[in-house]
Amino acid sequence: MATALIHHPIYAKHDTGPGHPETPERYEVVMKALRADAKLWSSLAEISPEKAAKGLIQAAHSPQHFKRVESAFEQGQDRLDADTVISMHSFDASLFAAGAVIAGVDAVMQTNARNAFAAVRPPGHHATSENAMGFCMFSNVAVGARHAQNKYKEIERVAIIDWDVHHGNGTQGIFYDDPSVHFFSMHQYPWYPGTGSRGETGHGRGLGSTLNVPVKANTKANEQKRMFEGAIEDIAKNFTPDLIMISAGFDAHRFDPLGQLDLEDADFVSMTKSAMQWADDACEGRIVSALEGGYNLSTLGGTVKNHVAELNR
Image (cartoon, one colour):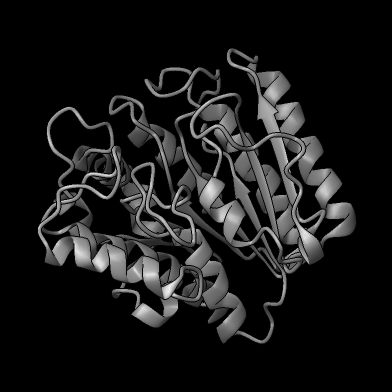
């Protein structure tokens, strides 16, 4: 089976205005790079998603949050917080972004694809259950994880790997007291949004189901790779997922303008391999990956292409 590629032209219509790093060109360079590799492109299972229904969004976010986001568009507001700029098509783009991760889950669970990558924007991992923030309206991966658990009896336990340079505070918070979802984030620290210390390990029944690996700026790539692989090994000793999801941010790339880490394409491929090996051992290879950050338009397309090519290997 091939890797499913889920995307939609609405992602290029989410206009964040001049100078904003989360630009429509991010989607365009990713798609251009994927299409330029004729062999890879022809081997992918291309899927066009549907909008995520309100009820599916509210499985991960409060009704009040959904209403606030919806109302902001009805009232013609131009931002949800200082960083999260919105425009005419942004609400639809956010629903299609969450819908893409849902479609990826369905493709994998219905054996239409071996694994899946959702080339989406806006990103999602900073959106909390109650608030939009950090370019994000809804946590796409969190919505997908809840969809998987609610729709498929085979999916009780989900592991989320977040390797974006910024801590996925929103996704972490949504599952912080839930032992059925293990959230693992490796990120630059201290850095936006200021969360993600080693001491954040979960709450109540979810204690021990969150693992943060904070990384200092300018940490060498081989050291970061060792930390990543060690974390996966530690989690796997006590948690066997039925599905693995990746918040695939590529702003830990050494040339990204919003990070200060040292990873290159080969390092993201190595992390992809580690995730795939865990998925092969634990859950029949089931992985759904979704684009988060990555803001260097000169490198992002190639880095994503190599990630997808490894998923499709």
